[in-house]
Image 1 (cartoon, rainbow, N blue to C red):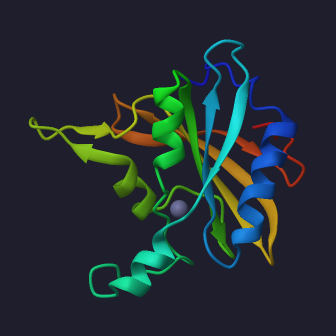
Image 2: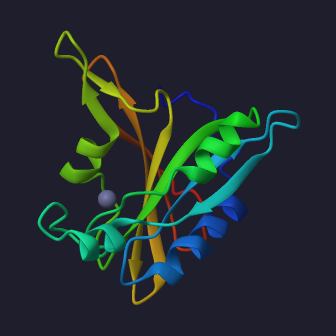
Length: 167
Ligand SMILES: [Zn+2]
């Protein structure tokens, strides 16, 4: 699993998605990374976090707002899939929080199948969580679901410049 090729996650690409989530502060920002169907290049695809909107419309059904929840608008994802591109990663930020995969993040990423086994909503997709403090990305951690242990495991960490940290 950690043998997965992460070279497409260059410091430039990580820094680019930092620039996507920073302006969302103090709310959670989010987006996707897709592999282009023809040239194989990984591209950042920003999207809206609908959490705050949903919360304001219906606070009883959506008690959490945009500062501690993300609900990505999937329209850019659907368009990219329709165009034949391959989803590789979902990223979001934790404003004034650490780069970790929270209980809420696990809930959003998984569902239970008919046999009661936990499965990914988007199979094989990586998850990146960015710690943003005072509007600035400080650190990010990358997670992947391990079907054998039924858990998310951290496979890489990146610093404020998007450089991969030695683990
Ligand atoms: Zn989260």
